Image 1 (cartoon, rainbow, N blue to C red):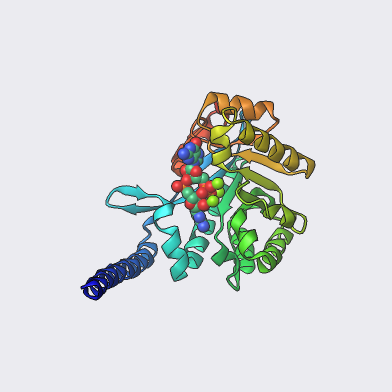
Image 2: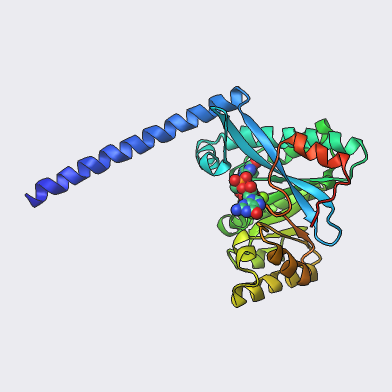
Length: 280
Ligand code: C2E
Ligand code: MG
Ligand code: MG
Ligand code: MG
């Protein structure tokens, strides 16, 4: 009996696995079709100078349009990475965002652009050339572009990733470490890689002021960034007291729903009309 039920469980498990794999493959081909159909779109979230309240940059965040809704990246970036679609999708994102921001900059608006990269993209053979091509085609000056990579990139694939990122930086673009603070080992790599910016993970921002260890760590990260001459951006600011704390600790820049949510390009354009300042 025991044997039978084990076999039964295995069968159920196998059926479940099968369904999961099938769903994955379906999603991957759906995503490929979505890219061909132009069903991806970008939102842009302002990055704000906490001293002047000025919008200094926007971060491009990809969404998938489906049945009149916008599907967030957490639901498709993973499968896009597994299937390799992230390479053409990432190139589309880069191109679209650079073109858009290059146009804004023509009207004398000194705004920067941040684009997220996945490690698969960075390690793909022609990536550095692709970035150069997109800059040339869009006319965006390299120093207006910040490429964001998760801290994990440096942990999982230090040698090659650091080399590729150094090549990218030689193009004149800026580099940012996203979600900084989750893995301390990345600190070691900061010595080998010239990084322009660190983005403090929202899990720190959330508890800043409320948890003394987190507050201390956050303060330490801000100081570290400053000492290394980096721009420090706190992500996920939702509450006025978080903002005040971060400012008091000398954090230069912030991003979060308190200041602005990610918005369509048209929303960003209406900021230019105004002072490009966010009421803080
Ligand atoms: P990320 O790069 O750390 O982006 C910040 C995420 O935090 C965004 O989620 C943004 O909407 C969200 N956020 C901003 N302010 C707040 C806040 O105050 N509160 C809360 N709760 N959330 C806030 P989103 O757009 O869902 O993106 C999630 C992640 O997906 C990104 O994290 C990034 O790792 C990845 N991603 C987004 N766009 C791209 C892309 O174009 N390419 C690649 N490779 N990854 C992307
Ligand atoms: Mg990011
Ligand atoms: Mg990230
Ligand atoms: Mg982040």
